[in-house]
Amino acid sequence: MNRYRMNRGRLVSLTLVLLSIVGVGDTKAQYTRADSLYGALSPERLAFDVTFYHLNVRVDPEQRTVAGTNKMAFIVMQATQRIQIELFANMDIASIIDDNGRNLTFVREYNTVFIDFPQRLVPGTHQELTISYSGAPQVAKRPPWDGGLVWAKDAQGDPWVCVTSQGTGASLWWPNKDHPLDEPDSMRISITVPPGLMNISNGQFLGKTTLPDKWTTYNYAINYPINNYNVTLNIGKFAHFRDDYLSTSGDTLALDYYVMPENLELAKEQFAQTRPILASFESWFGPYPFPRDGFKLIESPHNGMEHQSAIAYGNGYANGYRGNASSAVGLAFDFIIVHEAAHEWWGNNIGHADIADMWIHESFGAYAEGLFVESQFGYEQAMTYLNGKRQDVRFNKPIVGVHGVHQPGSGDMYPKGALALNTLRHVIDDDQLWKDILQGLQTDFRLRQVSYNDVVNYISQRSGIDLGPFFEQYFKHTHLPTLQAFIEVKNNKLTLAYRWQADVVDFEMPVRVTTAPNVYSTLMATTKWQKVELNLPSAESFQVDTTHFYFKLQRKTFYRLDLLERLQRK
Image (cartoon, rainbow, N blue to C red):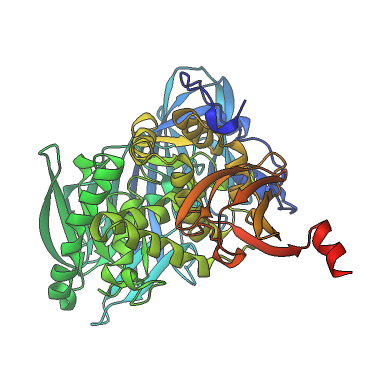
């Protein structure tokens, strides 16, 4: 069967394969017991499904401490007497109490907490635990790339506190079942802060309460499932203003902005970009996924983070990435607003089921930047923008990480992943179908966590193309496929011999080349040599489309004499 002419059929169920602790592609590494405890779906994790958290903590910027409780509600999925949650080892647990008021015993190993019950829990039953804890969470050394609390000061010297935990894990500051496959159905956040400060968190603001000691508790309700690393706090003295976005369905989305007071006018001008950004993503991916929770941008002392419905913004009110870009059109918009807003669809609506598939967040998020450029500035500028990312690819390891050991892949998931998805669009070569696939992913996997196999199988079946070898080459191997294009010139006739040189034995992908002056033809290249005659005036006039397809090109020209000409020269 020709891989690029596969019959379409109904979608089959897609199986998550998450427990294999093996290397991927070119990756070879050794992993520890701590890695396996954190990354694997152990029986103690599979035994229960979290339905609700209420995180209720007091944050002391002067002491740099967090103290309080997390109430966790869950459904028992498998009979068990022990479950597993996470809290970093430097944080203390005072007690774990069940809904009958019993003080449960627990054992700690690295950042893992095993909780033991006095009797076996029955499948289908609902349980609640209240975990009381405190401590000084680790400090983020290079946020947002390093996980931890950020204890900054604003221009007036007042506390300015936030958190980044993507990759490191939310359990660095609050106890939870810290695996991306299990998100709570909803959540409540109560953050208590010193007098004069405010806190902004995810979701719908429920109001604030002033306590007898003059500290204030800010309450928020998250009305949708949320990945634990997206749970956030933002403590400081903010100025607030509001705008609205009218969706294509006629619904109004509240846009709330919290910024340092001295930047209020700058923010009003810069954040005007939000509405066209949301409009672009709505057209490409479908409606904003979290309308009841609204959309917030909150100024932060680090570059930015995609906290669901409460995006951290730290781009200095400059276009590009802090005033820099890899192409001229990249300076026409604020990179952080575009990229982090894209994560509301890619990462927050559709999440990864294992951090090894973090590329599902970041490759699609980075590719979405190009789609925004296309919406605002046209297709050609979008191609210029995406191809500008080539200079950022490092080719250091595969984009897909190692499953089961909390190991993400290469940072190439941003630039290389975006370029691979742009290539895939042109492999499919049907823009309406491509948009239908992007929107279908958002609809069919809404508020779910997906695996590598889910994404590959879905796009393959919707497109009618077996894309397994394509994804394996681009996402599970370090290097690009190489197109070997060798031209033989003989008796003024040109013959092209071509094939793919790839890590994947059965890799094949179309390539566009000039077979006649100013005429591009599509050739289906495989890993086996093929030939085609060229109607070109010279070998130098032969061109390969490397704008819409991302690969390495090896090009050679051979000049040969035929037998008669050789004899005449003797």
